[in-house]
Amino acid sequence: MACWRGYLATFNRNNLCVLVCRNLYFISKGALRCFYYVGDLDVSNWFFWEGATVVAIDSFYDQVKSEESIQAVDDCELYYISFEELEYLYTHFIEFNVIGRILTVKYLKVFHQHARMIRKLSAAERYKFLLNTQPELLQRIPLGPLASWLNMTQETLSRVRGRTD
Image (cartoon, rainbow, N blue to C red):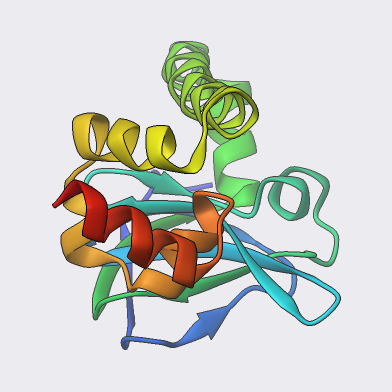
Protein backbone atom coordinates (compact mmCIF):
# COMPACT_ATOMS: atom_id res chain seq x y z
CA MET A 1 0.00 0.00 0.00
CA ALA A 2 1.34 3.44 -0.92
CA CYS A 3 1.68 6.25 1.58
CA TRP A 4 -1.51 8.28 2.16
CA ARG A 5 -2.11 10.68 -0.71
CA GLY A 6 -4.52 13.12 0.92
CA TYR A 7 -7.84 12.86 -0.88
CA LEU A 8 -10.02 15.97 -1.09
CA ALA A 9 -13.82 15.99 -1.01
CA THR A 10 -16.17 18.94 -1.22
CA PHE A 11 -19.73 19.16 0.07
CA ASN A 12 -22.16 21.94 -0.66
CA ARG A 13 -24.19 23.49 2.15
CA ASN A 14 -27.02 21.19 3.31
CA ASN A 15 -25.63 18.15 1.49
CA LEU A 16 -26.15 14.95 3.45
CA CYS A 17 -23.74 12.06 3.53
CA VAL A 18 -23.28 8.71 5.24
CA LEU A 19 -24.92 5.39 4.73
CA VAL A 20 -21.83 3.47 5.73
CA CYS A 21 -19.09 5.81 6.87
CA ARG A 22 -16.06 4.56 4.97
CA ASN A 23 -13.81 7.60 5.56
CA LEU A 24 -12.36 9.64 8.40
CA TYR A 25 -12.61 13.31 7.42
CA PHE A 26 -10.43 16.27 8.38
CA ILE A 27 -12.23 19.59 7.93
CA SER A 28 -10.16 22.12 6.02
CA LYS A 29 -13.02 24.57 5.42
CA GLY A 30 -16.63 24.72 6.59
CA ALA A 31 -18.75 23.16 9.32
CA LEU A 32 -20.58 19.85 9.65
CA ARG A 33 -23.26 18.55 11.94
CA CYS A 34 -24.17 15.00 12.82
CA PHE A 35 -27.78 14.17 13.59
CA TYR A 36 -30.19 11.27 13.95
CA TYR A 37 -33.94 10.87 14.18
CA VAL A 38 -36.07 9.98 17.16
CA GLY A 39 -39.40 9.37 15.44
CA ASP A 40 -39.86 12.47 13.29
CA LEU A 41 -37.61 14.61 15.49
CA ASP A 42 -34.21 15.60 14.08
CA VAL A 43 -31.69 15.46 16.97
CA SER A 44 -28.31 17.17 16.56
CA ASN A 45 -25.53 15.08 18.03
CA TRP A 46 -22.51 17.32 17.40
CA PHE A 47 -21.03 20.14 15.34
CA PHE A 48 -17.47 20.44 14.07
CA TRP A 49 -15.60 22.94 11.92
CA GLU A 50 -12.12 23.70 10.59
CA GLY A 51 -9.40 21.60 12.16
CA ALA A 52 -11.70 18.84 13.44
CA THR A 53 -11.83 15.18 12.49
CA VAL A 54 -15.24 13.72 11.67
CA VAL A 55 -16.78 10.25 11.41
CA ALA A 56 -20.08 8.57 12.14
CA ILE A 57 -18.48 6.63 14.98
CA ASP A 58 -20.32 3.27 15.02
CA SER A 59 -20.54 3.13 11.26
CA PHE A 60 -16.87 3.93 10.66
CA TYR A 61 -15.32 1.63 13.23
CA ASP A 62 -17.72 -1.29 12.63
CA GLN A 63 -18.22 -0.59 8.89
CA VAL A 64 -22.00 -0.90 9.19
CA LYS A 65 -24.94 1.25 8.08
CA SER A 66 -25.08 4.45 10.09
CA GLU A 67 -28.03 5.57 12.18
CA GLU A 68 -26.61 9.09 11.91
CA SER A 69 -26.36 11.50 9.02
CA ILE A 70 -23.66 14.09 8.49
CA GLN A 71 -24.78 17.38 6.95
CA ALA A 72 -22.73 20.28 5.64
CA VAL A 73 -23.71 23.45 7.49
CA ASP A 74 -21.48 25.50 5.15
CA ASP A 75 -19.78 24.70 1.88
CA CYS A 76 -17.01 22.34 2.99
CA GLU A 77 -13.61 21.12 1.91
CA LEU A 78 -12.51 17.94 3.63
CA TYR A 79 -9.47 15.75 3.39
CA TYR A 80 -10.10 12.13 4.08
CA ILE A 81 -8.57 8.75 4.65
CA SER A 82 -10.39 5.44 4.24
CA PHE A 83 -11.00 2.98 7.04
CA GLU A 84 -8.60 0.52 5.37
CA GLU A 85 -5.87 3.15 5.04
CA LEU A 86 -6.25 4.15 8.68
CA GLU A 87 -6.01 0.52 9.78
CA TYR A 88 -2.88 0.16 7.63
CA LEU A 89 -1.32 3.18 9.36
CA TYR A 90 -2.16 1.80 12.80
CA THR A 91 -0.65 -1.57 11.92
CA HIS A 92 2.50 -0.42 10.09
CA PHE A 93 3.35 2.82 11.87
CA ILE A 94 2.98 2.28 15.60
CA GLU A 95 3.48 6.00 16.23
CA PHE A 96 0.17 6.68 14.49
CA ASN A 97 -1.58 4.93 17.39
CA VAL A 98 -0.48 7.84 19.59
CA ILE A 99 -2.25 10.27 17.26
CA GLY A 100 -5.34 8.04 17.37
CA ARG A 101 -5.26 8.00 21.19
CA ILE A 102 -4.88 11.79 21.38
CA LEU A 103 -7.87 12.28 19.08
CA THR A 104 -9.92 9.68 20.98
CA VAL A 105 -9.29 11.42 24.30
CA LYS A 106 -10.00 14.85 22.80
CA TYR A 107 -13.41 13.86 21.45
CA LEU A 108 -14.31 11.69 24.43
CA LYS A 109 -13.87 14.77 26.61
CA VAL A 110 -16.07 16.84 24.26
CA PHE A 111 -18.85 14.23 24.34
CA HIS A 112 -18.57 13.81 28.10
CA GLN A 113 -18.76 17.58 28.67
CA HIS A 114 -21.86 17.81 26.46
CA ALA A 115 -23.59 14.86 28.16
CA ARG A 116 -22.90 16.34 31.59
CA MET A 117 -24.16 19.78 30.50
CA ILE A 118 -27.43 18.32 29.19
CA ARG A 119 -28.05 16.36 32.39
CA LYS A 120 -27.04 18.94 34.99
CA LEU A 121 -27.94 22.39 33.69
CA SER A 122 -31.21 24.22 33.12
CA ALA A 123 -32.02 25.57 29.64
CA ALA A 124 -30.76 29.06 30.62
CA GLU A 125 -27.58 27.58 32.13
CA ARG A 126 -26.96 25.48 29.00
CA TYR A 127 -27.24 28.61 26.86
CA LYS A 128 -24.82 30.51 29.14
CA PHE A 129 -22.45 27.52 29.04
CA LEU A 130 -22.55 27.70 25.22
CA LEU A 131 -21.84 31.44 25.30
CA ASN A 132 -18.84 30.85 27.54
CA THR A 133 -17.37 27.77 25.84
CA GLN A 134 -18.40 27.78 22.17
CA PRO A 135 -19.85 31.17 21.18
CA GLU A 136 -18.89 30.53 17.54
CA LEU A 137 -21.75 28.02 17.31
CA LEU A 138 -24.22 30.90 17.57
CA GLN A 139 -22.69 32.47 14.45
CA ARG A 140 -22.40 29.28 12.39
CA ILE A 141 -25.24 26.94 13.31
CA PRO A 142 -28.94 27.52 12.53
CA LEU A 143 -31.16 27.87 15.62
CA GLY A 144 -33.16 24.66 15.06
CA PRO A 145 -30.18 22.28 15.06
CA LEU A 146 -28.50 24.30 17.83
CA ALA A 147 -31.61 24.09 20.03
CA SER A 148 -31.74 20.34 19.47
CA TRP A 149 -28.08 20.00 20.48
CA LEU A 150 -28.84 22.00 23.65
CA ASN A 151 -31.76 19.63 24.34
CA MET A 152 -34.44 22.31 24.10
CA THR A 153 -37.01 23.47 21.58
CA GLN A 154 -36.25 26.31 19.22
CA GLU A 155 -38.89 28.40 21.02
CA THR A 156 -37.17 27.83 24.38
CA LEU A 157 -33.81 28.78 22.88
CA SER A 158 -35.31 31.99 21.47
CA ARG A 159 -36.82 32.90 24.87
CA VAL A 160 -33.55 32.16 26.70
CA ARG A 161 -31.57 34.19 24.17
CA GLY A 162 -33.99 37.09 24.52
CA ARG A 163 -33.53 37.15 28.30
CA THR A 164 -29.73 36.80 28.09
CA ASP A 165 -28.79 39.05 25.14
